[in-house]
Image (tube, rainbow, N blue to C red; front, side, top):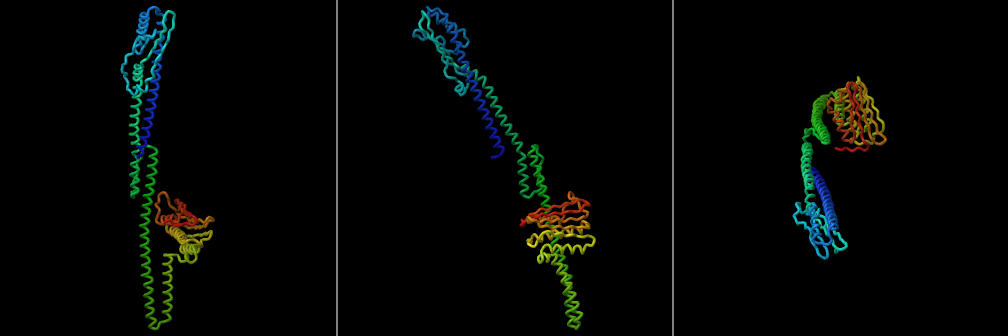
Length: 438
């Protein structure tokens, strides 16, 4: 059942209730008016007949009847009355109300018609037999008049109810029309069309929903583009790394192996001492190449001595290679029990920050603060005094995207504060006992 149908059903019930209550009120007033008017007419007629009876000649019955009929003839509403004169055991009809059809619907007549109205007045006087006048009122004309008065009001209530209900049905349909656009846009988002947008709606509530939806769609579209860019860059970096490893294996190890073969041949010719020195030099060079390749693939110190020692080695090596800048490392708390994913993620984040500081920021000072809190959570802050960048304009690069991905994968938060000529400050907050969510 749609919202539009429910609202119109509720309004229809309300209007029907109003119509019923209005009808009950009108019928109640009409019934009361008919009863009062009928009783009033009967009482007035009875009073006139009493006066005429008292003034009539007690000796002549015919004269009395004539007198009473004359009085009734002068009474305008006598045609709605049936008047009987009962005297000496004889009943004489002075006037009778004709049974005329009522010009009103039968349902209205049944609801409005009062109980039969009958008034009796006995008379006792000297020289005359006991008599009684009976007046019975016919409410037909009063009912017809009440119907004429009530019909326009009932018709007005009915017409207003129908028009108002139809108008509200149309207006509600118009107001709820934007819901179809919202559902269509949400279907587009569900199918991957993050460019779907909603227009500005007239209703403030729907306009707010449209604004929130459009901002959500923009964030989703931007996130998808960032993920696509990150995936492309990741693939490119993997291929570049493989190419570099293949180049080193081919140039360094391949040449070293060829040199060893040549030295082996010279040993066979008798130059043993000089050949041994050459083999030692080649072995040392091969060991350096393999160690560098292993460091790039996986920091050995991280597995052997833990995160703190691996970061110290990373910072010392960076300071040796960059005489124009200096990095300070501060570690508070112990990380010996850190899980493998936490340790490698923090190590790679610091490594990426140092790489960015040397390549892009032109910083002279870099600080790395790593803290294990009493609650078990971890906080990493890396700041430099480089040239910085405008975070509102500059699109985040692969390095920042990768660090954010690592932080969010551990259930943490990632925050970058940067401004032109004021350096960059990166803060990562990780909860205790973090578990990867990906």
